[in-house]
View 1 (spheres, rainbow, N blue to C red):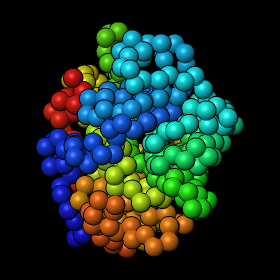
View 2: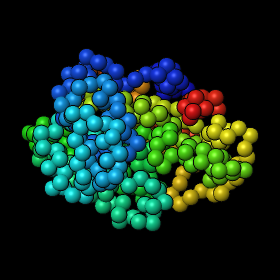
View 3: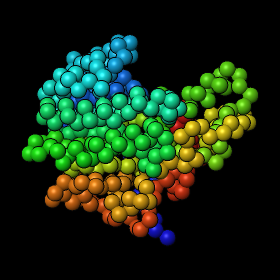
View 4: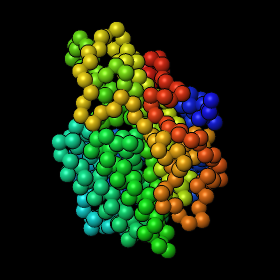
Length: 355
């Protein structure tokens, strides 16, 4: 049987690998540089800025987002001299160009992410997740940004809901954008990962609130449900590391554990029964990050996978990344999904991750 992990996923996860901890390389990459993050007031943005400021000495860090209250609250915590706060919407290309002036690196985290809300308001989701992605691309090229990484989701692989479909479209826009750069320096890649522990919209704070309010049972949509599970700090570190790894056009996918929803319930509320309420519109039993239909474009590295772009940059060997790490092709029909993952978190490990 083919073993998909050169390094076992449990070893990766619980020896606490920090993907961006290569200090010498990181100093060269981020010190005295200007970094902009769209959607910077969200869960990822806050942790990204916390880690960026702790590890490096950037020239400027720009938070680009719509919500003035959230920006005001962030300013009370992140008030370093390098911090800048821009009110703006990714639907507004002109404002993006103003914000990206003399920026070196961009992380595109802005998105409408709630699956039920996207099902009910599809065009609004398209305006932000698809049109907004193209605006980010146009602004980055116009401003001479060096590298852009867009955040994706496991829901973009074989999507069955509107949110996943818009993120797949966004992924395609970013990976194809390298073909319209011409002789300019800007390069685009994508990072795709699964559910983030405790992030805004996560089921964890929802369950905890129910228990705090005295709930006698926890609602689950299906007891068979599994999800990829990732700590926020590891997601940030993976993004930072991939700025070093990227040629342009790759979709980077970390090797992370899965969890069963019933185990998560037991970890949060031991002994509390669950109640099956039925799958919501657009919801899957298991999530996918590397679809079987793209096995021929999928490369396995020690601690991550790469899906090559359908429009690769001429002369680039995606089996060897920009820092010299070497990958290998996966076998015919290979898929990476949460239901058949080789490592599931135990109840005890889930408790450790959800204090």
